[in-house]
Length: 584
Image (tube, rainbow, N blue to C red):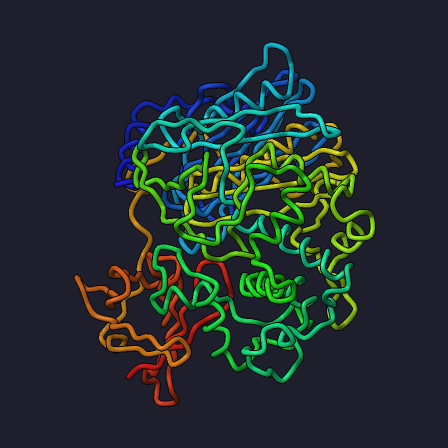
């Protein structure tokens, strides 16, 4: 239904679009323009837009039958925005710190087809006071309805709130609005709190970061190499990702799985993916084990210990760890996801992954948490030194992960950030320590745009502190952007013709003790079991299929020397770890 609506929209656009004449090999665009074009491999479409000081351009790019990438440059040829698209739509957003003209270049990206159709819609937002926070408010207001899921956003500048705003509803059933005290599941942002707790115990001498994790969790297998607490902190342990395997095994098809199940699963994994310390591979399993290390080394439940040692001293009175599915959480935002352009459904809460997830907090409480990274009210300078330490691989190279935070460079500024994703929650907590700026973005809308919106807030607020990179000069690939688009270009991408009969059958994994039946339905493969709803597969390449559920995101079939299908490896959409199934 969603795709059909967009195709209907495209037909309307084709009938209504007025084409702007190009000047100097670039098509001039302005507020309110909508342009629909056919783009061929090897070509680039170029546009130009003039913005006054303080204006924000929001270009909506619909990729109907072709993926695209875009680059925006200013008058001095510095890149101010670049992105690529995989979904049906994307946004190109840039802000004018001073009046100037911007160039937009759109090219095909990672396509197998020779040509396709896209549509570009232009909207310009102006601030009456030339205040960046007013522009940010107008920008965010585009994406949230009063009767839909929402978000809570806080920008801190030198510890002072410069922007604080909430949008939408925390509960659609009872029409309860999101406020600055609404609490959200932080998802993987929770990891920095778990890591901070480990640092406290290490400094107190209760544990050592060099300890073998089997010292605290002896039921884990004795691997060929020692896995230390530091390996878990740094995501360099080589442990399997637990969530994918447990959902495939039938535990929590909607995202629920608890710590005890994780421990039982990991106790079955006799081998590691790689030698600990060899490389960084993000692992929720490691952080779930860290929560257990805290519990077993202190004799206190993880949630209670974090409350006593972090939340209460920092007066984070609305923050907690949900380690019990029956726990009532006051002021909680319920998680939602879109079922169409107008309707939403509630996601079931992934409360069980404590340590890796499961912290509930508000923007007001998180402001206190981030301030502690400066003051050391909890922990002091010694522990701050520990948690700011980046991981080190066996070869001596440093990773960009440091105790629950990613460290990177963003246009010349040091950026410390972590994103969170679970069920219908999307969270982003970012610090720019050199500028003493922090941005907190908590949402109960499952759309991935949350991360893009959070990043654009940073770009608008910090624009005058960025060091932009100059675009390298290339031969002009501009083509006539006035060429009309024919509806005949909307034919679907070609599919691979393959006899699916050889893929059908029962597949069993001894690793997770689970089996699935691959059957034929309407000429395509469908996966059925007693554990999940039917999963439909689409072929993307020879022996490679894509499923319509995240835990069956990609299936690669395996053949023996006689070219007979003997099994498959199933991958999730967020991890490189595959679970092997053998065909029975």
